[in-house]
Amino acid sequence: MFKKTTKLLVASALVTTLSSAAFAADKVYKWKLATTWGSTLSPFIDAPTNMAKLAEEMSDGRLQIRVDAANKHKAPLGILDMVKGGQYEMGHSASYYWKGKDIETLPFTTMPFGMTAPEQYAWFYYGGGLELMQKAYSKHKVLSFPGGNSGNQMGGWFRKEINSLDDLKGLKMRIPGFAGEVLAKLGVTVTNIAPGELYTSLERGTIDALEWVSPSMDIKMGFHKIAPYYYTGWHEPATELQFLVNERKFSKLPKDLQKILITAMRVAAYDMYVENYHMNAEAWAQIATDYPNVKIKTLPENVIKAMKKANDELLVDMAKESPLLKEVLESQKAYMKKAREWTKMADYKYLEDNL
Ligand code: PYR
Image (cartoon, rainbow, N blue to C red; front, side, top):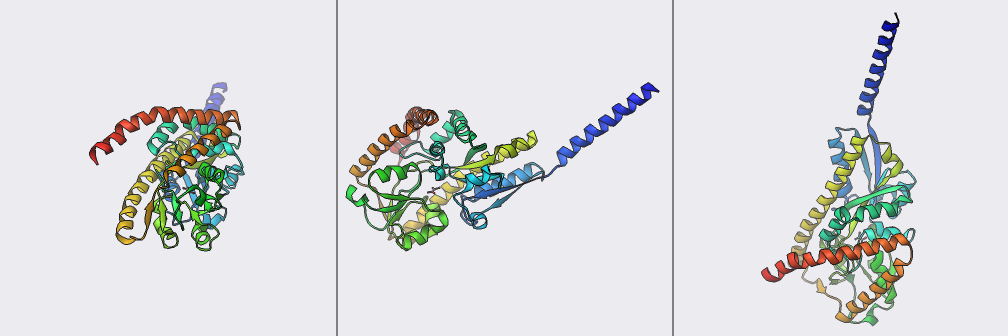
């Protein structure tokens, strides 16, 4: 009798364990992601959209992520707050947009005169950058992952030519991130404006100049119709977007779905970088054929020199703000020094010899 009861108990415990395992494997997680980008803002919007599609396919429908574009949630620059607060499980944006709230998150997008995209990706994945980014976001109980890179950006659209440092004084320009700090030090009135309002702000004269991305995304915005001077880049050599994930929600996902999510983010990020390169090549060719009035310019040497000096001074100040910032800036500097020697030998020398 005792034996029979024990057997029954064991059998029923087994059934319970198996059915709860089956239940866990069947459970569908329905998440939401808020992004800074409008629903047609390719290729930025493609990174979260493709990531969600991949995650759903790889999980056989167990992880479903709805992507809400800025037109839906109406808070394009409030992504960190919404993920931190748990209204959204995930976000997709650019870390430097919340430099006013948490300066420690600024360096993970891009830095003026800093690393190029391949250098920065190497730093993120193999040079300790990803760990430092998680450290910076841990106080918000948010995880952060690379979310796609624009590569080297153009310096922006100006209504008037910049011939001297005096031309910068009093200029009103939309430019986010550390580059905004550099220009502010040289007398520019700097502001950040969400992508959806850029054209109107320039058209109405709220700003005199702006930088957005590069031909891939700029031409469709129509800036060339109202600001003919298109400057070459110095300020954003490798703009990395970020996926943000609410840490508590992530910890509740089964291990396999966590792995699927991380893989989907990494694949989608890489794909956006490549897609943007392709779109740039097409749009750059289009400028030559369709928009001959666009005037491609480079800032005068003395202006670039002054920007570099301001940048170096501001980096010294920034490193004093917190031990973590000091660690991040030192890590970026050391990594760039090492990687740049190879970039010069590989890409630069190749182009020099074969152009
Ligand atoms: C910008 O806001 O300017 C970006 O490049 C993301």
